[in-house]
Length: 208
Ligand SMILES: Cc1cc2nc3c(=O)[nH]c(=O)nc-3n(C[C@H](O)[C@H](O)[C@H](O)COP(=O)(O)O)c2cc1C
View: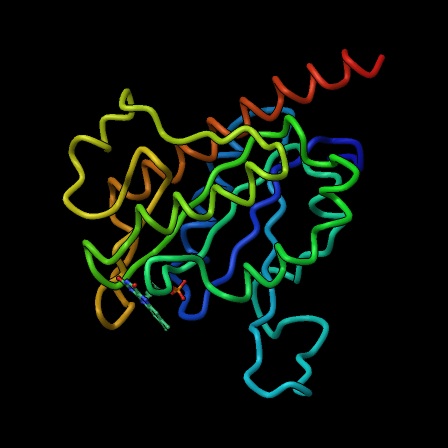
C-alpha cells in the first residue's frame, strides 16, 4: 500500500485485551474492502501520578496515536472498554487534545463508528456507544451504526447493537469474542470502509 492509500483509523484503549481483540476484527472487516487499509492505534493510560511518564512506544500491540493519524484518516472506528457506562478516561483524554483539528474542520464529512466491551450483559454498552458518538458529532463526522440486515443483530444473546459493535467479556474479562459479536465487528469494519471510500471521493470532487 502506498502513502496515498486511504485508511480507516481504528483508535482504541484496552487494558485487558477485549477491546483490542474487537479492534483487530474491525480491521479485518476494513481490509476485506479493496482500495483501503486499516491503521490500528492506541492511547496510553492516564496516570494517577501526575509526573509518571510512559515509554513512547508500548511494549506490545498497536503504537500510540498522534493527531496526524486523525487528520489524515478517511474514517474513524473508536473503541473503548465501558467504564461506568461511559468511555474510558485515556481515550477521552486523547480526544480532548483534538481542538486544533476541530478548529480546522479536519474531520468534517468523514464517517465514524464506535465499539465497546463490558463485563456484564446490561453493563452500559449502549450508553457508552451513544456517548462516544457525541464528540464525533462535534467534529462534524458522519456516524455509522450497524443496520438490521446484519442478522447477527437479531440472533446474538451477548454483544452487538445497532449503535455499534460490542462484546461481553465476562466478570474476569476472559470471555472471547463470539461468533455473532465477531460477525458484527467484521460488518462494521466493512461498512465503515465502504462509506470511507464513498465520502473520500465526494470530498475530493468538492475540493477539485
Ligand atoms: C473503572 C471500571 C469501570 C467499569 N465499568 C463497567 C461498567 O459500567 N459496566 C460493565 O459491564 N463493565 C465495566 N467495567 C469492566 C470493563 O468494561 C470490561 O472488563 C471490559 O471488557 C474491559 O475491556 P478491555 O479488556 O479492552 O480492557 C469496568 C471496569 C473498570 C476498571
